[in-house]
Length: 485
Ligand code: GDP
Image (cartoon, rainbow, N blue to C red; front, top):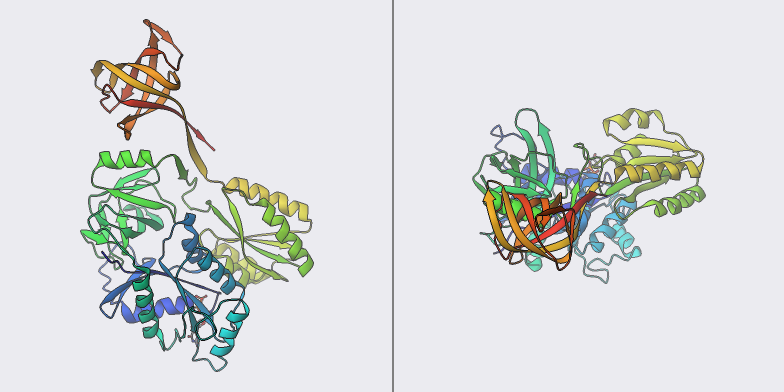
């Protein structure tokens, strides 16, 4: 079944992303504000020509990270906004790179055409100079002139989005459990964790279990983006849910399940490399955005080379903005987002405006006069930001031959080691015909009535296993270790 497009708006700062989002929200959404839990949800739906479009309403870096979130696509289509006054700027190019690298269909909205200095043709020329070939300039990338302020061209923009969505053939399985992504989460002292999700497939219902990484919770209350309590929501809709016991990180995928057992099984089967974010504030994560400022072009280039060496597989430093001269309030604003950027200055200082606004935007400013100190500090930050990843290693596989006894959560089994080895005091994953059923722990191992610590491949043994799952002959138990990386 067809589903609506989920659209993200990116572009250089001050080129009109928020104004466009606000214009569309104000003219196209009839706000009912019936006292829901959230005042403003970071995504909204509009109706145009009887069809729905979902907009992700996220400023700055968050929009970028929604393009990049672990290779997965939170959005389906992108709008790259360019001011017709200023033309192509650094972040325009960054946005275009992010959009094209992720393989998004996109269109270019040339904004602020109501301004006297607006020049649409010059803007297109600027795109062509950067190898972005728009329609009419030897290419196929759709572009259209708009004014986010007066609304000129916005209706055409929505029409074009619907047309592009048709080409993209976006589908959903309406009766499947829901899958999608976390957009944001907050903790409210009264009701607990409030998570905003975007559904990308299936259906989400009150009472469903939600699996986000290794967090499992039951949906106590489900709301649409207007704050209205609803029983279910379909694909491409933003969803506000209550009931998660912990804060999920933005960008993380979720799944729903109709009951707890299925949820636990799904959670375990997807737990091979669980990413846990160590703080609630989500300052840690995969992306480490920084802004580089230096006294001259030579040092800036040297810095960029240094910084490029410091990214790791787990934490990627991305230079979201670079420039020469003092650190100003504008740099701080550029750095606002989730996670906020760190502004690194070399041989320069931050001005008063920057220092005063840094706290408000949770942006950290660090200045250095020695490159070596700068890289040392950044390298430490990279380490500190690395999320705690739980890794599992299977050390052995055993086959259950017989069940000797079963009391409550404890059972004594007879088994043989197929591969690797078995040890006592070790976690096991119980699988039946390849499907994971749950986990347990081997408490004790015995061979010929004598307790042993370890049994090697090919040998039979008895084991006391603790698990809620009733183990049966023929089951395979995978013995694994779990460690933090
Ligand atoms: P963002 O940083 O890309 O989200 O940019 P904003 O939406 O905050 O816009 C930056 C400034 O440009 C604001 O003062 C807006 O009022 C103004 N602006 C945005 N779009 C237009 C437009 O189409 N026409 C005019 N005249 N001003 C605009």
